[in-house]
Amino acid sequence: MRFQYLAISLLSLLWTAPVFAEATIFSPTKNVQATLVLEDSMLTVAVKSDAYNESRTIAFKAENELHVEIDDFNFDGAKDFSVWQIDDGMGTYTIHRIFIYESEVGVFNELTPACGDDFANLRVERDKKTLLSTYWEINEPKLCVTNFSPD
Image (cartoon, rainbow, N blue to C red; front, top):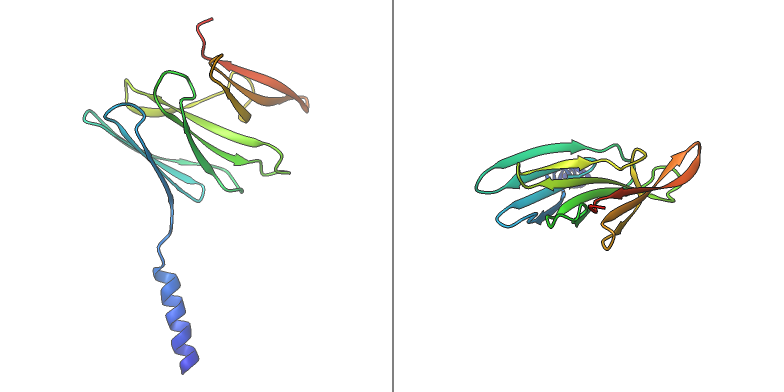
């Protein structure tokens, strides 16, 4: 009887235990609030301001843990975000998906690199207003430069 009571108590505790999701709140621009809720391989993005509200969910194909990074990835003064992970293979490089804040419409849109499919091993070079990443061409690593400078 005592074992049954203990088992039921443990099961009810597990059943009612809340799911902890990682939430990040930031302001991409003045008077705008963005909330990112990362839960497993799903990211919910909510943007609120006086002029608009936007909410959507983005799915990620990832076996490894996802991380959120806030930065100005296109050097326009607005805060953007990246969701990154260690690669699912040997764990030797990072893969970033970058989302740029579009202030005129109040949404985050995904940025694609100038070459390749992903921002692998991303490096941000502020002085040159570029994003450096790696892509592979016939199994050979190459440098990809995604440039935001007016030159």
